[in-house]
Image (cartoon, rainbow, N blue to C red):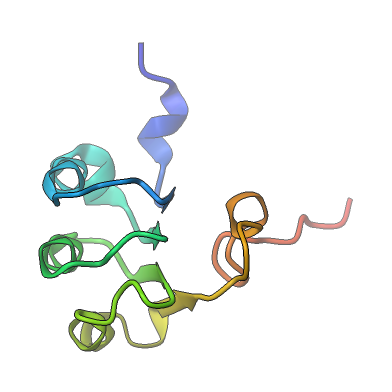
Length: 112
């Protein structure tokens, strides 16, 4: 049984997904969730030309986050689509995993 919350996901962060081919990302992109995603954080994994082409084809995606040094071959292509919503994660260490990327997945909780 699929949790109901998955039907509302529009922001997904994948940290070091270990994807050696773009097949898994292509399957995600074709899924209902992939068609609905607005923000994708692809962290500590190479943004290959295949990955970039899949990301560029995602219909509602307006923000893409990548890690420093992982998108050298595709940076210009992705920057054309996402502009200032093409965000580089450059956090030292692994704190980004539980704290989130500043300005994207890290959000201060509202005051009570």
